[in-house]
Length: 272
Ligand SMILES: NC(=O)c1ccc[n+]([C@@H]2O[C@H](COP(=O)([O-])OP(=O)(O)OC[C@H]3O[C@@H](n4cnc5c(N)ncnc54)[C@H](OP(=O)(O)O)[C@@H]3O)[C@@H](O)[C@H]2O)c1
Image (cartoon, rainbow, N blue to C red; front, side, top):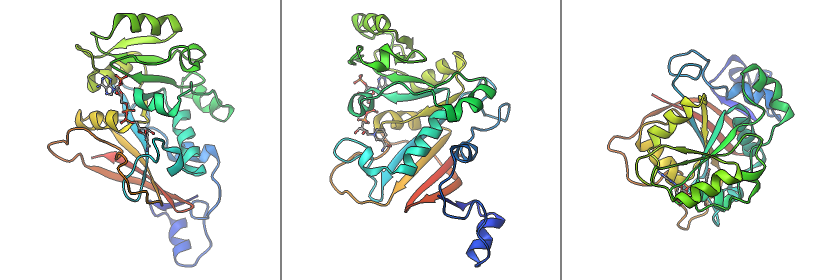
């Protein structure tokens, strides 16, 4: 792993043949270094967590030809470094917001409490692991799974007011916390973000999938995009990382940092 942007004195020295600095040398980064590289905006900073405004970042991986999955899963287009960043972003988050189809297809489990992040989380006033928040209209989920029955922090089910009452009851019986964030069957993305903020969750991470991410983009609530560019081509008809109706005006982001590992590029982009 090495840093390509921003260009620091260390990266510049390496580019001109000088001694590689800590950031520019290609070596495995510790989770503490990754956590520092992906820290949420400082508490109290404008628009950042710590105030009442939640900060929502997404973490996705895409191939060179824009595929967000291969044979229905993201694992084949991921890498070890991508998974370390995936774990780090979870380690920093209060809650992981995810669409029900990703939960079903990727077999989501509760987030683990990892010793590597314990100190950081305690210092940030966070519990040992982030909650998982599943966005669903149907609640067509297997509530006997560990995601619902054995989560350290109760799994949240984000749904609309008109969700099927029997499924809501099944979710609650399994130990999930049902949060209504929409007037009809579906969830209003902006309302979901506000509802999580009202629960004291300000460091939000979404792991997609594309249908959910598209709505978060369209609603203008995505603050940051962490994107892994996988050096692969898969062709076919895979989804892109965000789908659904296109936005009227493209949402513009700026590059905050770019890391590289084994040909994978890890960009961090912030909404302008
Ligand atoms: N490349 C990556 O980084 C990445 C990341 C994540 C996922 N993926 C891949 O993406 C695929 C799944 O993504 P997807 O786009 O099909 O699905 P998704 O966004 O994960 O989930 C869609 C489901 O979420 C629920 N949902 C979405 N918006 C909602 C709203 N406004 N209100 C209520 N419920 C809502 C609905 O669930 P119900 O049907 O239960 O109502 C909907 O069917 C998988 O192949 C996965 O591997 C790739």
